[in-house]
Amino acid sequence: MSLMQRVQRRARREILNRTAGVRGVAKAAIIGCGQISPGHLSGFNESGVATVVAVSDVRAGAMASLVRHYPTIRAFRDYRTLINEMHPDVVSICTWPQHHLEIVRVAAQLGVKGILCEKPMALEMREVEEMIDVCRSAGVKLAIGHQYRFHPYFLHAASLVARGGLGKIIEVRGNIKDSVANNGPHLLDTIRFVLGDRPVRRVAANFERTGDKMNRGWPVEDAARGEITFEDGVVAKVSLGDFSPTFFDIEVVGDKAKPWICWPGDTSEWSEPTHMNFK
Ligand SMILES: NC(=O)c1ccc[n+]([C@@H]2O[C@H](COP(=O)([O-])OP(=O)(O)OC[C@H]3O[C@@H](n4cnc5c(N)ncnc54)[C@H](O)[C@@H]3O)[C@@H](O)[C@H]2O)c1
Image 1 (cartoon, helix red, strand yellow):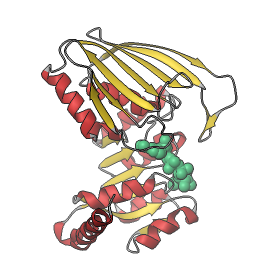
Image 2 (tube, helix red, strand yellow):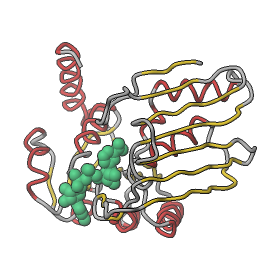
Image 3 (cartoon, helix red, strand yellow):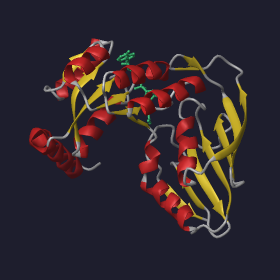
Image 4 (cartoon, protein in one colour):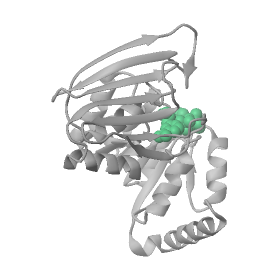
């Protein structure tokens, strides 16, 4: 981002911040103030429709830099106290997935109206199902941090698929150099999004774990491969971890065109996809 863009962004943030009270925007709170939380904070504050009023972390030190940058934000060690005292309309859950179900349950019980929970949604299907049930019965909107649904390249690919611009979809190929339960959701969710969230009929996968790799406290495989068969017979072939030949890429193979969206070849860092090629 250029200096000019940074200055404009800062000015916009400042204006939105100062006018939030007058505009009556939604009150947001962030639970878990680690690596990903600043993105949620700026996302809310720059959206023009929400402003962050409070953050929570079991570690006071984790909240320090957020509060230093935004002195009006209140900090709470206990997220229950935050919700009870601040009554946020929406909360972002930015903790590890082992805590997602419990926090969703409490937030829904305490009257929060919307929850943006980071990926992976949970580590077990029974937790995923309970999160959905709890939110459905409390009338709470639940969204998961699958941000590539908003990326212009994937929006473009999804729109081409929806309009039949690729012809008949033959298959989808996708790769990501990470585990299924860590960044795997980005790959799998983005494929589903590009294909218009069509229903899935069957999933087959194999995992290889030869070492003792862990991610945020849970064991992960070294490599995985799988096939997702959608109701209409389209198959997505995915490779993850050591089986993945690239950092992250998705190719949608249609009989008229094959958009291929990829990250820079030598990247090992999270960034934006930089190429959308048509074969
Ligand atoms: N969407 C993305 O691209 C993306 C990128 C990075 C991380 N993530 C996801 O975000 C989540 C957090 O990852 P991270 O890298 O920020 O982790 P992190 O370890 O940096 O931060 C997690 C924070 O949660 C706090 N915490 C733990 N229990 C808590 C509780 N009960 N109440 C309040 N705070 C609590 C921890 O003290 C820690 O500060 C993970 O699920 C991860 O997969 C998503």
